[in-house]
Length: 149
Figure 1 (tube, rainbow, N blue to C red):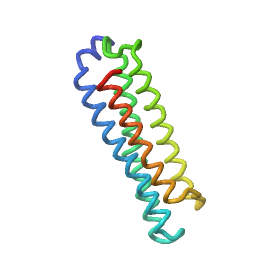
Figure 2: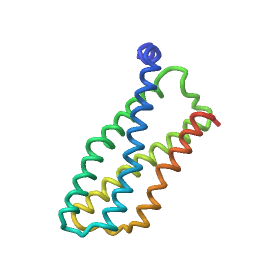
Figure 3: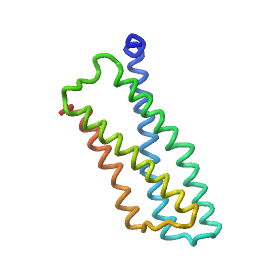
Figure 4: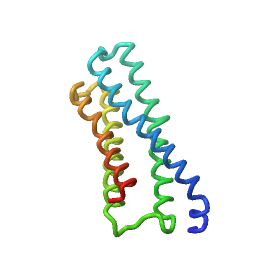
């Protein structure tokens, strides 16, 4: 298995980066949709239904598959011999932030279900603040991987 991973390392890495970009794009956009949904849309209106559809499609067609692909290609990179130095701090920092990003992803999924059920209790301001979470996590991940502190 190690030979396969080492041979296809550049492809696995490229697919991992592509998956991360798609996942991050969705994680940046969905909270922004929630801001507009909560601030501009009357519950039960045709616009409410349209926002719910956009949010569901973004989550189901882009964010969820990109997350699974990110994890799959990322784990393949982890198991590629000679790639990760587990005695350094960076892989642990990255792992913590990727898990936090995944928890944020699931938090967004629960908020979408709240909109569908008509019980959203998060304000537009709170969604704006939460929209910064993936940015901060991404910055820590990129610095960890590139600088390898």
